[in-house]
Amino acid sequence: AQRVTQPEKLLSVFKGAPVELKCNYSYSGSPELFWYVQYSRQRLQLLLRHISRESIKGFTADLNKGETSFHLKKPFAQEEDSAMYYCALSGRAAGNKLTFGGGTRVLVKP
Amino acid sequence: GAVVSQHPSWVICKSGTSVKIECRSLDFQATTMFWYRQFPKQSLMLMATSNEGSKATYEQGVEKDKFLINHASLTLSTLTVTSAHPEDSSFYICSARGVSGRPGTGELFFGEGSRLTVL
Image 1 (spheres, rainbow over the protein chains, first blue to last red):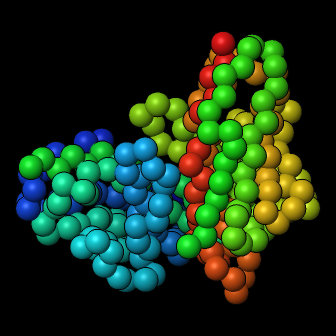
Image 2 (cartoon, rainbow over the protein chains, first blue to last red):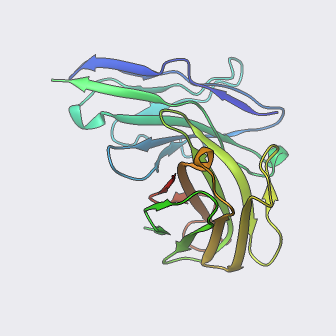
Image 3 (cartoon, rainbow over the protein chains, first blue to last red):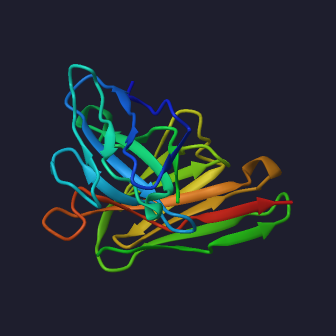
């Protein structure tokens, strides 16, 4: 069975400080990993996906198959980054269904 | 970008009644839609996968007779909570995946969610 674990429910950082959201997964196959973000009173939206290997809004995430991790990082957090972040996994072995982690709330203080 | 719209955004109903929630892909065709349920301060739990023109696939523990899903067209899926009870109160979210070669392929787009409160 596929599983996504986000160990931190809340991350509180000051503006300009680095932030890292941890995500670990278990999956028997080649997974596709995503980070979704939900800003206050808005719908869930895709932030980035591992196959794109791109940086969105200053965020990056590297898939580490050895450690089965897909941590999300940003070197200098901004107040507008305050939101709920969900790590998610999909794969053919599971019918391409998206499985979400528990979510991490990020609060960036001024 | 692709837009998924849910209606209603919130609904209050009496126990024992049925409630229908619509999920529409506004500017792309969606062969597959997914229905999630989210309890307060918890993550999204997949309830079922809705495929256009065929029966929905329900996740383990989800009652198919309780949560009726119909995906009659490439732009509309409906979730009907039958004989709703207070424990069905939750936030229901749909998402849609596009057809191959068109905007939205592979990426999931989410609706704004529908909050159901059963009195």
